[in-house]
Image (cartoon, rainbow, N blue to C red; front, side, top):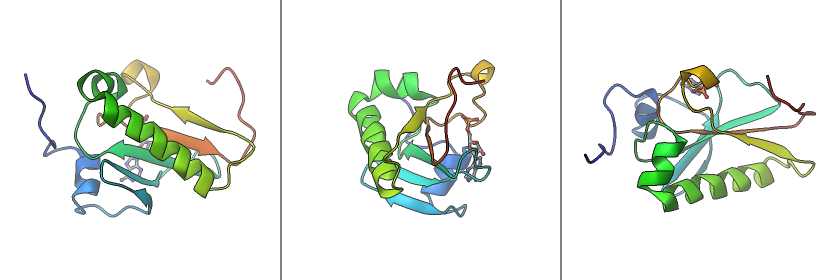
Length: 119
Ligand code: AMP
């Protein structure tokens, strides 16, 4: 079954379409990066693919180059944000892991000390 390019009721598809505002910090042909509304660190940016996939695993299996582009954009955001001491890239996958928006997204977190293991 082929996936739709976008999903009508998806909040992140609406950000890509410009229908919902976001503070965009990076953009390229296959990704968009914007600040999280509820930041968990001084830098908390979400990187999303421009096409709709439910989660990172689905993106990786259907569009491996798209997944690579999301990670490359995350690294570009980290450099742009000055996160030279380190940063964390997170894909929450599934409701049990805290995923609340079902359009694949990479969290880029940094600007403070990050503990391990995460909660
Ligand atoms: P997750 O819980 O991994 O699915 O992450 C979803 C993230 O999207 C959360 O950190 C929310 O704060 C964030 N979020 C939800 N709606 C928006 C929005 N309109 N603009 C920016 N961030 C959002």
